[in-house]
Amino acid sequence: MNIWRDERVVMTLDAGGTNFVFSAMKSGEEVVEPIRKPSNADNLDLCLQTIVDGFQEVSNKLSENPVAISFAFPGPADYRNGIIGDLPNLPAFRGGVALGPMLQEKFNMHVFINNDGDLFAYGEALGGVLPEVNNKLVQAGSPKRYKNLVGVTLGTGFGGGLVHNEELLIGDNSIATEVWLTSSRIYPERFAEEGISTRAIQREFLSRAKSEYPKDLMPKDVYDIAMDQNNPDNNAALESFKIFGKCLGDSLANLLTITDGIAVIGGGLTGAHDLYMPAALEEMNGKCYTSNGDSLPRLVQKVYNIDNEDEFADFAANHSTDIKIPGTDKTIKYDPNPRLAVCSSKLGASKAIGIGAYAFALKNL
Image (cartoon, rainbow, N blue to C red):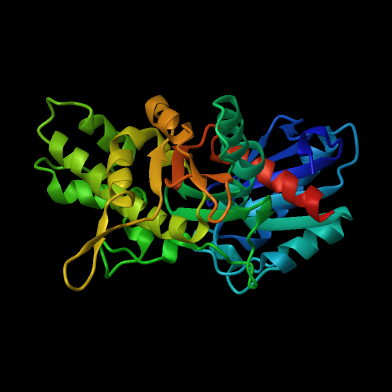
């Protein structure tokens, strides 16, 4: 499937708890100016009418008929059947609302809804990090190629998705890769999102700060304090991002030991990657211990931060050697250094989600 040469048009929506952003895509690119509307997340009738109006306005802007509607919603739901259930940031849908079938009746076309973390990963696998990494490996003369990707989004919450060989892992209940509910070895009594979210940075900083700050202090404010060496709370800010990085590295290590692929990070907190990525890498490339105190590498593979050019060069280097095939005079190439990569999204979460939504619709059509 080559989405970049496909002439079909799909209407899309990036649905958040505060705003809905409607658009349309053709050949993997937006073809209308996005339309932004308030989500009206606590009023079901108004929310549903907003969704219908948004897609109708996009349709009116198009010069050709769309073949489908495809979009992302935040959180778990029965996406296969288009039913939105109990979402914390969209309370109007509690109890179950057949949004997909409703839109199919209204617009007389196929409707596809997925989790935003899943579509982020799908977009990055088809049109973002994964093809970019493989192209750069070709240019570097490396024999390595990657087909597996885990994508995570960092922001108000912690989302994710898994892609294998251009196939998105949906799961039997349409809720695969709910990474926010995985456990944390840094805070064993909490689930992962409590250490990998906006509120985690707020909590860790406010608990260490010497001065008084508003409780709704945003991570960007904490980042600015961390970058100001003259601020008396500079160390508190740096420590909050370090702990965030350790929690992120812990979760990524768990995911990578299952997926054995590239990891890409997106979402609003990626702008602070210079503060949390060192701790995340240290955690992924760190040690774990047996009951008698012996240490083992946390992962079999070494993880490289390929946002750093020097690390990418080492990641792409050919480490293979020739070994003999027993009983013959032949040799075979053997690479004794399995390796993985982590990096920040270059597309941005919103664009990656749009590409993922577009590709998912075309694949299923």
